Length: 469
Image (cartoon, rainbow, N blue to C red; front, side, top):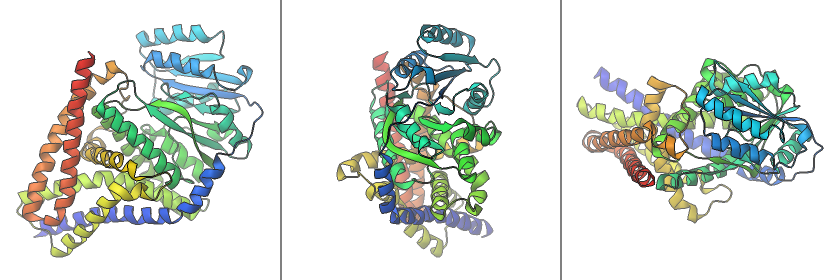
């Protein structure tokens, strides 16, 4: 009886989290009209006088061909060369480092590029960024990943906002993939939808994406070192929180100014998403009370941060609900009628949120987006059990495999193994919910379909990569 009560309370709390996501989404959508006006005005850009800029490129055993392409793209920037400095912070093994040295030598006569090698790297990307800051000479710092290639107007567009009074500016990125698989197309569709959601939902408390942004160097120095243990997975979220708490003003420019590479396979997507979600939860958990109590932030900003936090948390919560269903069945327990009623209502509404509500009232959404939305929603939900395991047992930095060679590695097997296991678990949960807790059935069925979707994508990855080899 006591155990049944504990399970009821736990399940009720989890359903409440999903309900909070829904309520916060409604509140955010109510102010959508004002945010859309901000989007339209944010694209009006004036010319800007040249400012010394330092471009920081963290690099660790990445694809050297991508680095060469990035440096070639920097040569095409609409920015005077004498006002441009490029710092490559290399944490690679010796074999890769040797190739990087050769590439830098090819460009050092036409581009002010410097190679900073850390023989004993620490702090992952956060440590690399802090190390680069010690050597940066530009008044403005721009951060680019090795696979993030800027359009010629990238600096001209973003730096104009800094001249206009903003402290930092973030551009949108159009993602592509070097491996054309069925999975990569679904992931690219999700990235496009994410851009729509971000530009309409998080206009004031948007999270920096870790690349494709510029910031005044003195502002970046004022926030202190980002190389702290809890922020090493997502240093961009930590930077965002510190900037907002200190009262700095940023702008999300509703314009695609860079291209980037998305995860090409299901296994690679699992590793990437786990780092983003769990790392963000670690940072926001540490700062959420400060954010809510802050006298600097407006109420809408606090609401956006809270929505961001609870949305991340809900991705783990839905998998725990699935596990609790199996616990109910295994221990021959039944949740109370009251809890079942709450769960039934919350799940139906939450599922609507997951499938339609999140972008149905957002700018640029049409019914043509619905198939892509459903596919993306299932892809999103399929990662929930992996996020739970990652949060408890792993919490390590993984470089997302993006090249054909890297995609054929352990991440491919990870995707296959995980999708098989979760399909079995969620299938059993569907059966258990029909026996002991029928209101849980909609959620369990949703997770089963998402796991089945993940299995299809993992098999398609295996077939596609086998043909390429």
